[in-house]
Length: 395
Image 1 (cartoon, rainbow, N blue to C red):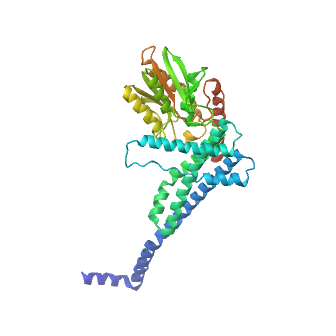
Image 2 (spheres, rainbow, N blue to C red):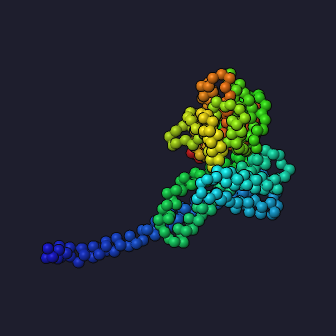
Image 3 (cartoon, rainbow, N blue to C red):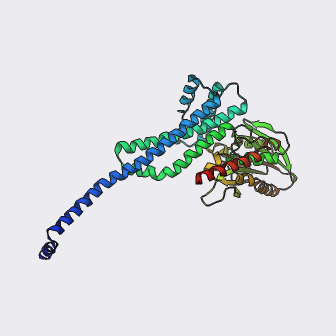
């Protein structure tokens, strides 16, 4: 065998052996240099995305500052910059007993802190304008935090020269970019008080309230009693048109404790799967309510104790559509959602008492049919604007 290999090398000659040596050297250099080349290329892309996110975050700060004052002074700028570093530490989960109450307490403390800050920077603005700025700040801080996390991993990959870290961040970047752009648009929409996708629950509630007057039954939550096909329906929603979510869970629990309720129905926006159409209406059971889960827990605990059925109606949309201006497909789904709610109501005998909750951020959506008259026109104009922007991008 050894003689055969020597014979083969002899057939190659000096030139053949030289070619093999060159090939082996090139092959070794390729494996040594290629990972560094790939790391450099990936880091260039990550650096560009991180810079874009930092620019978006800076723009949201400037926009929020202009909402406070057209010409903000140094004190105002410093106050907003410092408040963007605000953080929330969840309660300890080692002992699960009482975790809902602890989380509820911390969320209230967070809300009070936001309110105090907004009142200090825009004391003369209306209540609704203050609520809008509060929501805008929450979205802006979320974008700022996301930007800091991305920058952290970019710098960590550069510092350690780890292609594994760079690969992990790169794989997540399409989702992160989409989230960042959504938060950027959402900050502007919420601070202006525009109707957003997540406002569809309150919008359904306001439509069904009609011309009835509402009363505040819980902090930032209003209610109206409406007769729907012979059934008494207590309709709840966050107080609008300022950006609010309220405490619907506590409101529902209090109503159930005071009277005999046959059913609780919730209407909310829900995240769609890729391939599903925006505005798809679905019916199910349970509490359709996002967020940290405190308000949902109050409803679930109360209805379980009283053996009250829970129905839910959801209008599907993407996460981006939920926090940006309401799309036409979402607005057009409202009549179908109302019909689904009525079907659920009619399952109970006439004379029954039911609770309907329009869950979600009521930004841009008032408390009854009269106060939401301009929402449909706004959505139509917003849809035309979005389509025009898409045509420009294609060109």
